[in-house]
Amino acid sequence: MVKGRIFSGMQPSGKFHLGNYLGALENWVKLQKDYECFFSIVDWHALTSSYEDTSKLQQNIFDMALDWLSAGLDPEHNVIFVQSHVKEHAELHLLLSMMTPLSWLERVPTYKDKIQQLGNQGKDINTYGFMGYPELMTADILLYKADTVPVGEDQLPHLELSREIARRFNHMYKPIFPEPNPFLSKASLLPGIDGRKMSKSYGNEIPFAASPDELRARVRQMITDPQRVKKSDPGNPDVCTVYTFHKIYSPDELESIGTACRQATIGCVECKKRLAERMVTALADIHTRRIALEANPGRVKEILEYGAERARAVAAATMAEVRQVMNL
Ligand code: ADP
Ligand code: NA
Image: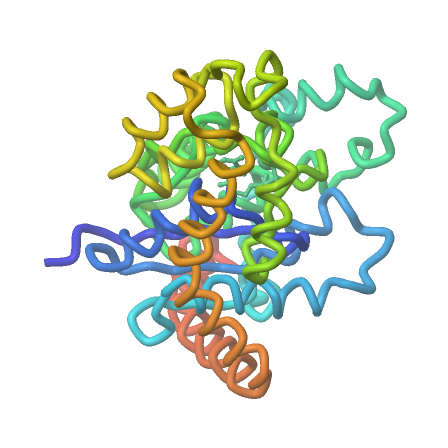
């Protein structure tokens, strides 16, 4: 039994990292079993905040496809495609924009926060496209009549806006769109090697595509309990980034590692070595699949073309309905 239809997208902005995987992609890999899923590499969204230098865009799209496929998203079972390959996203975005009050977009928290942070001078916020980001996201979701959207806490206001726009459309013309429901991800935020939230904007990330040696090097750079200077000092695992990662990668050894740290019977160097080997093992299959796919760009292109074809079929049917109820 299929539980519903999911739409979800990610921006191909480069440097897909472990936080993105554990916070989002890993969950998609689980959801694909129970839901009919549309997963989109949303390249137009990437332009809403970085439109000036597009020279890496195609490479970033390819890399993201590699990340998704090697993580285990099944391109037969799901519809995996690039947003800009399906022009109906743009048409629905335009039509929805006609009926969306500006005040609805102005009160979206991510927009308000950006304005407050940068003032009106920030060049990425005084564009029409940036403000319309949640409008485009709404078009993405409604185009496939998705009833379920996996989101993090920070995306909830965007989804609320999507529901409002769907209601308004349904009320004004004909009720053709389901109101999409959020599916809140339970994953907590993964820290980066400096202990802050892992984010490409901090440069503290562990790349999802990291080789075993890169993984080891990044783990060596992780910050530990700052009070623990010598190996003989007892440590506090609760403030240690390495320990946070052990929670994910060494659940069976967690207690003994915590105790050994507190009693100073294990040093940070050894503790990091153990973590690194755990991570190398956990990510080995993904890594192998990624390397194989990377060597076969033609196959990746085929997969994305196949996905776009299937997405287009659904999108075209929705747009035919939209045009009809709007007398277009
Ligand atoms: P970044 O913060 O690196 O720019 P994005 O904003 O592009 O990452 O996030 C893409 C997806 O990955 C979102 O679903 C987001 O919630 C998730 N994500 C990003 N960083 C983390 C993290 N450190 N821990 C868990 N999930 C994360
Ligand atoms: Na983010």
